[in-house]
Image (cartoon, rainbow, N blue to C red):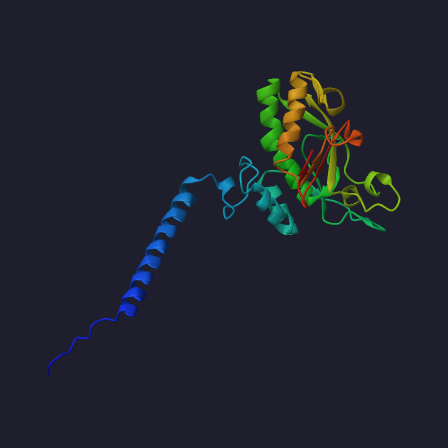
Length: 241
């Protein structure tokens, strides 16, 4: 029996060529992904696990948002980062609440204020990866205390009737007033934010670093109501002033 070979049609050759091209693209993409996965810092890759021991990177904000939406994952991240904490008490007063809150150990004074777990995680990252390195590099001294005005306050924005509830009404914001160092020096937002001293440079670095961690950071650059503190608030839209 004579075997007859049929010539491949132009359409079939085009389809085969396109399939080969797509396969080459897929293989190239897999190679690039493998190289990025191997060589890029984990803090820049959204699929890599989050760690408080990693510097702040391109993917850090997204990881914080994802972990913060899961109460169990948030607490696990604190534990894995070596942050000791206790569960916060739950209070419900009208539009105010302290649900999903913790009291975490750290350099805050007064110590261990009640705050949402996502805020506690953001603060821990800010302290570890911004404040501690900046105190060493700018002040040449160890950071020993982060002074604050509080987290929870059952009120509207600026305490005005008819305004929407403040993030403080859910213990989701922290107002930082100043910093103390092991050599006895102290830097405050009120006195040093616009000074050219080492303390002023440190306070500015603290604000700028906070903008890489928190969704909303308000300082004396925003308005007079924030002349003496940094308002740190996680999640939502991003505002750094």
